[in-house]
Image 1 (cartoon, rainbow, N blue to C red):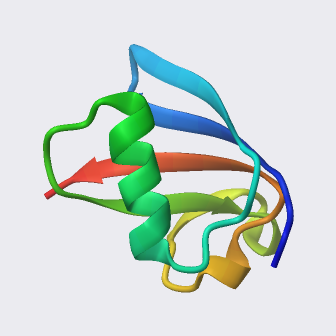
Image 2: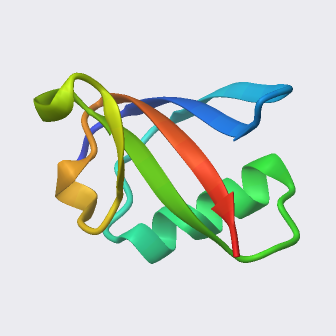
Length: 78
C-alpha cells in the first residue's frame, strides 16, 4: 500500500504535532516504530485514532487499514 499519511499526533494536551509519513506503514507495530523514532518517544504506548464512523470519537487502532490518509492519533503511554 503506497500512500502518504498526514498525521496530527496528540502526545499530551500540551504537545500536539503534525507529522507526514511518505508511505503508509504495513502494520501498527511499524507505525509505532516510526512514531517513536520521529517523535523521540522513549516509552511503550498504544494508539487511538479519531474514527469518522463515530463522529470522530477516539477508538483503539487495531488494524492499520482503519487509519485514513489524514488522521488524528493519540498516544497512550503504557
